[in-house]
Image (tube, rainbow, N blue to C red):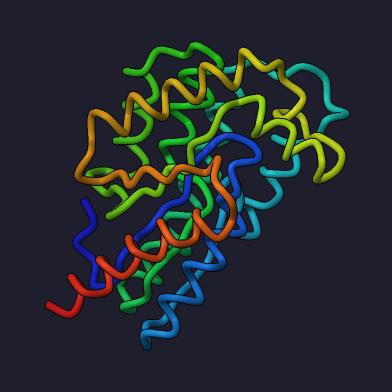
Length: 213
């Protein structure tokens, strides 16, 4: 739950779903309405968080224990929430974030098989009752997403995982969306870019209309 003046919107999905480029499109739409927008990402978002990101995604590091990965994600998130997200929201900005805590449930829970209650305990410790106002889930078949991601260039440490890893992540994302339909906005990311942006644009317009009420 976010009780700050601004809105907190998160963008989630597997590799190749197009969430990053569509986040920029959402930013443009919201700014055109006169709102002030801050864009960020996870892991990262702060100076400390970006250093943690380098460690998490470095493909040349030796195998990392799943608990280490999870704890590093939440260490980055703690810095991000306290030093960037919350201050920006309290100033009345809309904050758009490329991944947030849902990614930990999907990647470390679904993909790494860490027990969901352990992740929930960390989420509650770091964030309290704070949650995104709306989460845009860009969903598409894993094989399509991975082919798009491969075309972008060299894979990072997590992108190097096998397809089944991402199938489990996708299932976890969809399960979370089904359980919280009031928060999640499901976007069919298998469509053309124009079609995806039409879906996103309608959802953003609804948020803008509601914010005026």
